[in-house]
Length: 114
Length: 115
Image (tube, rainbow over all chains, first blue to last red):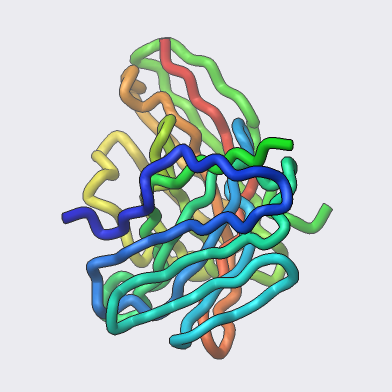
């Protein structure tokens, strides 16, 4: 089982719709969860992080975390063509010997079409 | 620009040559990470420094790879005797641990092509 699995893409949504990106993880010691956006040929750019169960909102983005189900999601409201990118889910387990390294999923490609 | 910087941005080399990459973290950040990313995959952790101490190395990091952070500021990643399988984007990230988490910010990356 992969440590982090993201919903297979590519995901295509019309402009103005809600895009839903999902991620499951296997390490129950995971403490913090991150969503990064990566445009083609560029490096990952932090969107937001979450470490408490529930929802966290930042502008058009909402992250949802359910530690019991080992599930984290990202909702993008009012999707824009500029949101078209690869979205990477990552977790951070600060316990044990893993320090602060991030473990990433393979990414989900999102396309927002006008 | 106060973000993470990396140099060079692109490197093309022949198999068997040595290459060295540099990363300059955000100035107040004491943690520095190296990751490698190949096409269609998420970044994979390579190694991590807190100040000048290298605290963790991935099993992915063969003996041909070495990293340093001599004064706890910039870091270098050297690959000796490059192989075609080393072709990838090498990403550097830095962070300053906060009360709740440890948020990493990435540099633009160095794209390595081994011919």
